[in-house]
Image (cartoon, rainbow, N blue to C red; front, side, top):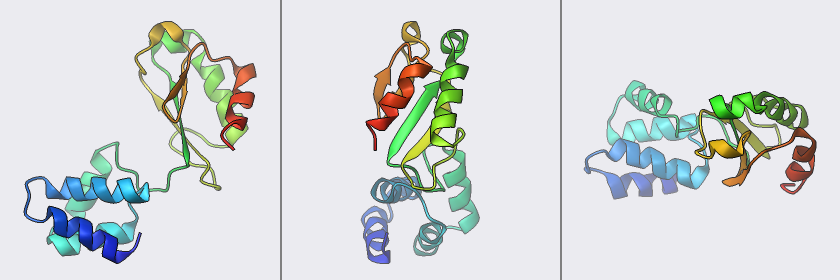
Length: 150
């Protein structure tokens, strides 16, 4: 993301209540993550200490300080999914992608996260890829599903 784009976002939000969070959200929306250089620029332009910017960026789970993959995989590990085999689903996804929860593969193809609930407990174990839900996910079918996201 170039400096002019960051400046435009900051100028649009300057002086509004909650502008710091809104600026970070807009930068991430355009860039998919928050690079250190962008955080430093926000700190400078909004005249907010970098420590405060970093505290906000690390407090909210929605902000990403490392690049994310093009495809986001979420695996429910809540109670209902856990007892129905969520760990096997997670192990399979980890084996196929080579990443662990909270990581992104080197090609920036996939990011993997575990979540406590996706709201469809009767379908457990549940796997979600780019917002598309796969209920009663079976490890044997996961490889074929991930191939669709090449």
